[in-house]
Length: 381
View 1 (cartoon, rainbow, N blue to C red):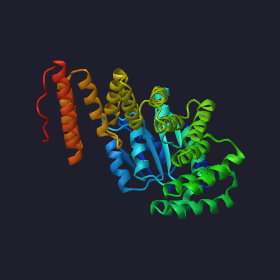
View 2 (tube, one colour):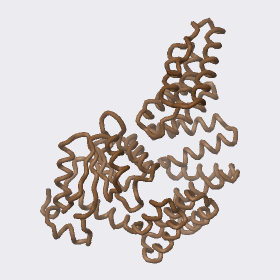
View 3 (cartoon, one colour):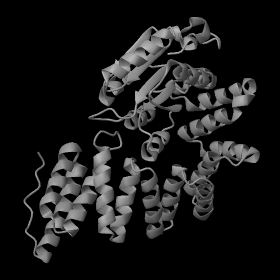
View 4 (cartoon, rainbow, N blue to C red):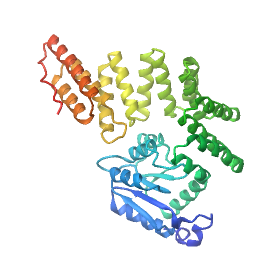
């Protein structure tokens, strides 16, 4: 711990009152939570909540709007830090001005890429000193506060008003104009105004070829049926930055819409190697591989999809049905039925039961025609 970090005057140099902020610490090790809590208390923090698991973190995030979240990537059994951030984003539990710091001892590309897809404000490698924590908080906090006035409109899901507030902030914060324009474009897309979002992306691209703006414009063109133009944009982004995962996903979708399943599958396989912990990506890869008859790849993707989806808000019944079909292809009717039973159990609804019976009928028919033993009836209990 440095003297600078412990000096109350030092923490007030940038005019930030850390005392009244609300903090959430998420780590499965109590010792780490205590160390982080003491570091925050030395900054003057008073309101600090703690969670020992991803599930506990989601409960607290659902009750309180936190100013700062320090979340470990590896949280033991249950949701990991990436899944907590993913769900918090999808459920709008994190305001635009909130600071989310992903904390981890994990340095692997897989972990960093997975977390980065959901855009934490920083990824901090353990061990963390108070000096590092204060520096990161100060740096990120000042940048995020340009969104403070947008928070209320965002919380009310009034995305058009929030987009207008972005324009107001640009007048006063020219230094952060690009960040505000990116927020504005995303808000316009959320509010169902793709043409207005397109104008923002084009405005940004007149200044500089930002990959996020090119990808955003490509998405709009793809939705408008301009598939070849979109494909070229996504490929251009990937050529410039082979780690821009969103462009891979969008390129795969463009190929799919063009009826080029093999090309789509190839792109998804490359993306899954770079960042494998995405449920939608593994689902799409499994479906494409199954359509092409690539059973080993389909099985690998669907199994990974089920594994990483177990504690994810993106968990999908398609992975269970897909893997059941793979098992049918391999004449493994016993596992196929187990998967269908799991689908019916975990995903309520008549449509799920109907799909399960259709898939079971297909697997049973295949087993009969290939000499494999017939499967027992699927339970709906």
